Image (spheres, rainbow, N blue to C red):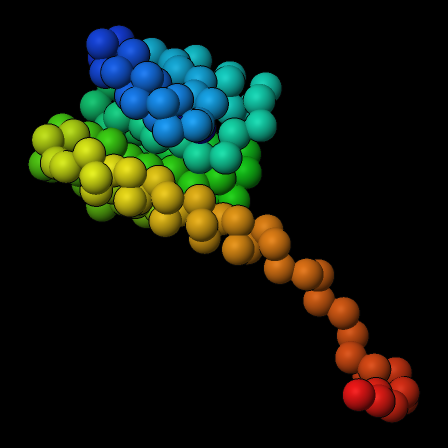
Length: 136
């Protein structure tokens, strides 16, 4: 998991929380630093703050999706005014003032969806597509 937030105390707290649940958590205190980590490490999920100097969470999310559209992104913000353009690049939004259970549920739900997509077998042509008969 990659956690991006310019609030260092929050980074430390959420890193400890999720590592206590068994996650490996990389942290970055800016969008730019987070994108460097995302491209140099295997990242299963990104959590990003919305309101950050220089690069906001919408730009971070769009960049992550441009790099790898399969990486789920959660926008974690204390702002109640997240514009629609930000929401088009994220898989979920969580309120910093909300329940930690809601955040955990969003993380687990997105990871379950990601795993179920990656566990699907590749599609193969059916036997009848090649003039073959299938015997059960």
